[in-house]
Length: 237
Image 1 (cartoon, helix red, strand yellow):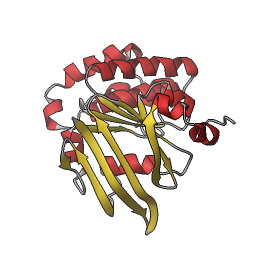
Image 2 (cartoon, helix red, strand yellow):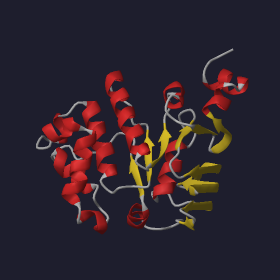
Image 3 (cartoon, helix red, strand yellow):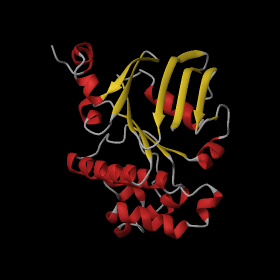
């Protein structure tokens, strides 16, 4: 079953076109990458899916139904969650308070303690630091809070926008292990990542954006075996 379908997506920022023609399809349970250089339109695509950037053309369907121009709260309630670039935590609030914000859908507020326990099970260090303010955490720990906050709504689709900026390599491996566990439990993941080598070590398939358009897609093996992709995006001759 296709969980997400993005078709001929067009988005404008202040009357300037940011996306011209983005197309992607993700089946339930997949790990998919959205890759490309800075300014290719990756973050804008995620923003359009979650409702931050209303498209001016194309369609976005989640679980078979269009979510175009739906309020962000409704899209989250349907089962989509975003881990934004830069984490965007509330620095003066505690870890626990930041996590609780993620249990936004009314159905999840009834199970707040259960959801907190599930996040603490994934990231034990957050239980230890639950009473500390987010500003006192390391970059990697702050990223764990951002991911945990998104998981508080029990999303069917988790959107991750450059989650490893400012994160130490050992913590990156720890976070990837958590994401694999999350996928094994039924969550679908769409990962935006500028480090293509790193992304292809995690995803099963990927879409490549260039200048606001989908220009290439394929499995990890297909992309790595494509000489054009290798020379342009991996620096291989």
